[in-house]
Every structure is written in C-alpha cells, then in structure tokens.
Amino acid sequence: MLTKINHIGIAVQSLDATIPFYRDNLGMAFAGIEEVTEQKVRVAMLSVGESKIELLEPTSAESPVAKFIEKNGAGIHHIAYEVADIEAAIAKLLADGTRMVDEVPRNGAHGTRIAFIHPKSSNGVLTELCQAGH
Ligand code: CMX
Image 1 (cartoon, protein in one colour):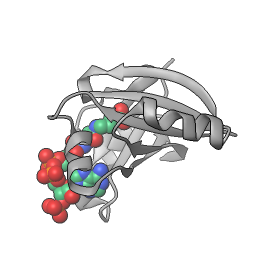
Image 2 (tube, protein in one colour):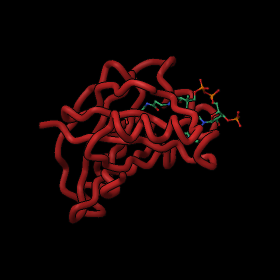
Image 3 (cartoon, protein in one colour):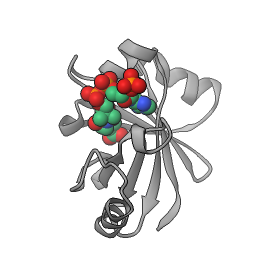
C-alpha cells in the first residue's frame, strides 16, 4: 500500500528564521514556499537526495500546527508516506478499524492529495498518506 516515505514534516515558528539552517548550513536544495490555505500553513519544501523535509509555519492561531507548537514547541510534526491510490488506502485502513482524521482526501502542497491518520491510532505519530499530483 505504501510506496515510500514522501516527506517528514517539521513544525516551525517562522520559515524565514528556519530555512537558512536547512538550505545554507545543511546544504539542502530549497524548492520554494507554498501556502496551503485549507491546512492554515505556509510550507517550505527542501530535499536531500530523494528525501524531502517539509517545514510548516502556521498562518493562524487555529492552525493544527499552531496548536502543536503551543503544546510541544517546534519539532517533528508528522511523517508522510506515499501511496499510489489514496482512496483505496483510506478504505483499507478504515476496514482495519484505523481512526482517520480525513476519511476523504484533502488538497496538500504541490498538487498532492493527502489524508491524515489520527495519532491515537498510530502510536502517537501523526501519519499522512500522500498521493502525488499529476
Ligand atoms: N503528533 C502527535 N500527536 C499529536 C499531534 C502531532 N502532530 N498533534 C496533536 N497530537 C495529539 C495531542 O498531543 C493530543 O494528545 P493527548 O490527548 O494525549 O494530549 C491529541 O493529539 C489531540 O490534540 P489536540 O491538540 O487537542 O488537537 P486536536 O484534537 O484539535 O487535533 C489532530 C489533533 C491530529 C486531529 C489535528 O492536529 C489534525 O487534524 N492534524 C492533521 C492536519 C495537519 O496537521 N495539518 C498541517 C500539515 C499540513 C500539510 O502537511 O500540508
């Protein structure tokens, strides 16, 4: 069902303050910033080899990322796995009794379609399914 890790999401207070560490100090390739209004976040994507790091800055106090930072501080927020067929993956997980945040895919960054598994159903790790855009 899963084909690979698509990215690791890291919650940050400020993209402007954080990007230089990843881009300049660690030397990752910076692929730009996108706002995902549906998720109330601004997202910066950086890559190292075929792996990606997604920095997430909340755009509103109601953003799930703002709530996360308030409770935990900045840090690793979620792991995203790529799937070829997100509807089929959701259907399988629901049939197995998994608690989904999203039972219907939503729009993610870069034209992807995404769905989250609730961390209570995935051992405390917020887990994202991600189907690449075409
Ligand atoms: N990782 C692990 N646990 C998390 C978590 C995270 N990122 N976010 C919340 N939780 C835990 C909380 O610690 C809390 O646990 P306890 O009950 O043990 O204290 C529980 O989940 C409930 O958290 P909450 O702060 O009360 O928040 P909500 O229930 O309102 O929301 C969640 C939690 C997971 C449903 C919500 O954050 C969500 O819908 N997340 C998915 C969407 C998202 O994160 N979007 C931003 C990224 C977008 C992108 O990548 O494009």
